[in-house]
Image (tube, rainbow, N blue to C red; front, side, top):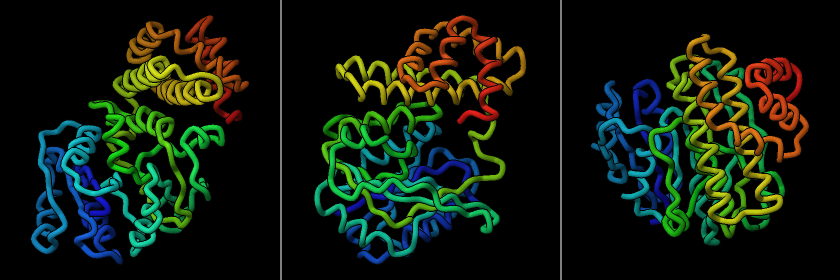
Length: 322
């Protein structure tokens, strides 16, 4: 079997039918790919909708688990997958009709990762926009792509060779938000071969409200710090040096900036609790400095002196310095 599409599901009764239709309206035989739907203990009617598809199509299977979060849903889907390649697709997104034949043709070279292109989609289609493409027109290593700037962080924008993920025991860290930021840099660094499919095939839906990650909470901040710690441990365990190390430091800086952005809007009690957590992980701020990016150098220097003052500077810089 060529391809496994892995779709975690939680509270997506409004979106799952569109997602499944898009995965089924394809130009390859049903025997050439499977759709693995992982029901993550969804309390709404998502499973009922999914079962209507299961009754009609023999290449869909459903795994039901107690609610464990997106990471474990993806991991459990990967564990039972039979495809040579796996594509993680979010259940409120969709893929383009008849895209799989050309994608499978690109995968026939045996590459570890295939970058695909995406667009942002909204309830009001007038706002739909194509994203900035990352085109990798010849097969190169993940390390070479790191030197060119890396790839987009969401895991959905890459089709992965299953044996590659298994060889390096690449899994999503359980029970955290921002799991892709922890997973994707590690996968890219370890990949021996990557190229891109340059047509836009992934529709990345942006909810106007109701997303589980739409409101920043203390757990988001703690999870971002966990992402930073994991990436730093990966650097140490693999003795990563030079520009590759700086790439991981930039990923850490991205996570910390997400944390700072969230801190700005927290109430005083929650902000104090999370600042204490950040203080216990203050050594991570020095990694921002080592990116040598002026914004990160300035912010990390001030935050190392005084967290609250540094956060105030970050809030000011956020308005005009990207």
